[in-house]
Each structure stands twice: as structure tokens, then as C-alpha cells.
Length: 227
Image 1: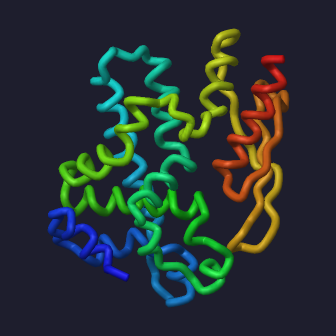
Image 2: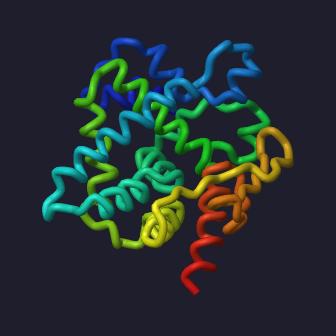
């Protein structure tokens, strides 16, 4: 298997800080097993901001011009967990993930939540090392086809955005998501979330990440409200 630095080199991207790039692929399970005092979570935070800026810029300059609500909905679809995992797998970036033995055995290399977080961490590391140039090249390859043709059926519906827009069409209030329970092993947890408005529970959802559980809760609420 090639190293991620070789992957970048094949795309004419010369890395300054290879340690930073490698860190983006270090899952917490690997860091714990190898007694490292860092993993890719801080870089994920940076990558999330980079991704939001890039998509916001593309949507703002999109032709034909999109309304604010259309931009918000489409951005949410483009950067949801399922979509990010899909982009990373398309680029085969999950091949470079550093996982603990247990996480590897439990299918972590292909789990959407882990792969999506890794993809954001990779973008964060690449931005810190190279700026926006390489980011634009990579995201244009995997994201622009969906931005230009969002109804191709491959992007997941963002029920959180749909629910919020539905609620705000009636009252200018914001729904919130609360953790109900978390159970299961640390390397494969199951979350249950509830979506709440003014103290009233609108729906429940379960998933192997908080993001997935929130989406399921929003879907549950949205489908009940539009009946």
C-alpha cells in the first residue's frame, strides 16, 4: 500500500510537514493502543471549517444564483456524514486510516462516521500545510459533480435542515437535539437522540454516531409533522 504522502505526490502536491498529514489519519483507537498523546480530532475541527468555507464559496457563486435557503439545504447535503464518507472512499483515502486492532476487526475502515471524520481531518491538515489550493483541486474532483447535479440520487436527504425549515415556516424558533442514551462497546456505540422544541419531544432516532441519531430523530419528527 502506498503512503498518503505518495498519494499526494502523484497529484503534484508536495507536503511540507508529513507528520501533520499522517496525524489526520490517526484514529483515537490507534492513538490509544500506541500510547500517542494525539489523534486526528483537532484536525477534524479545522477541516470542518475549511469544508464549510469551500462549499459556501462555491454555492454563493453558483450559476444560476441560489436563494439562501437553497444554499443552506444543498450545503447540508454536500457535507453530511454519508456524503463525506462517499468522497473519501471514492478517493480511496480510507486505505490510509490508522486504526486500533479492535476497530479494524469491527469494520472501522469502512464505517461512515470514522471515514467522514478522517476526511475532514485530512482537509484540515492539508489546509494548514498547503493552504486552499490543493483543497480546491481535491474537492472540485469529488464534490462539484454533486453540487452541479444535486438530484442524482447519491446524496443523503438532510432531515435536520428540512425539519428546521419546516418549523421556522410556522414559528421563528430552533429545535434542539439531546442525548437520550448511549450503549454498546466503545468501538461500536449506539446513540439514541431526541429532537425537542419548546420542551416538547418531536421525535427519536438511533444511530452508531450522534450525527446519524440526530438525522434519524429529525426524520422521525419531520415525517410525523408533514402527515
